[in-house]
Image 1 (cartoon, rainbow, N blue to C red):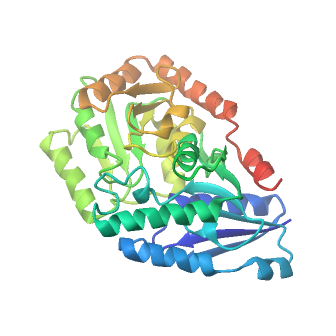
Image 2 (cartoon, one colour):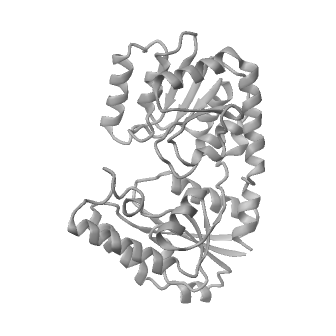
Image 3 (cartoon, rainbow, N blue to C red):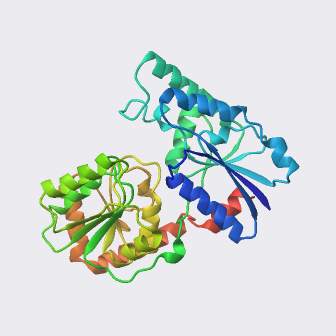
Length: 349
């Protein structure tokens, strides 16, 4: 089958969405499909330019060219690529422009001005018109719920699988908790640092990932120093390769993943469970709760340093329980149908 994948890419800004889309393209090729990945340049700042760029996508008519070249399936993933003109476009919705939706009245949302209100209405109208009548799958229940609430459009949940399953394994249940990912305020690595201060055992914390900005890295380093936990926290302040990350998962006691109000569970949660490691998260982390079940596949606690520290101590004191919860996390992925075979079968149907 000939499959065209449509994306919107900010040059030199390679985030989790791009990683997933490229992984999907590779999995299709492995199964003998012919794939064309069409990423169009897009800029996310300032707010006013985002709408202009989105409208440019709306003007693109790719249907004739793709039909002429025998495309059997056309799939788009994210704002604003899913509004390109094509009558039979399938959408695997990773996210909308949340600044106009549930982030509207937060510091991350559009400005609370007359112009901001006008932009909000324009973004919502853009999505409602562009997504109406499409075959739509979403990456999480939260994404589906938002689409239904704000745009009155139904969708089916299709959970993203892990990127590099073949690299992941379990070597041992060691003495450290692993937290990989982009370092920033929303991912709250600083909260994990504060949590480790509340532990009394020999358990350690390993954080790996470059900062979203230099300021984010410096903030985390200051937190480690301020709390006097330099001997208990290792911060690898760079983007680590998948093989190195897999090795760190393999030897970890467990993982911690505590972003604020994320749509989905994140690839790192899947990597933990493929490594048979339990995951600690928070009650306000968002869509991660479909995988992290409290006291079954890990712990879900209040976003407070003491509560997180107590959960870490529980894992360290009972490694057999940590192993059982890690195994249960792997089983939970199967119950939710999280696999590339499932994704490909549904999107190409």
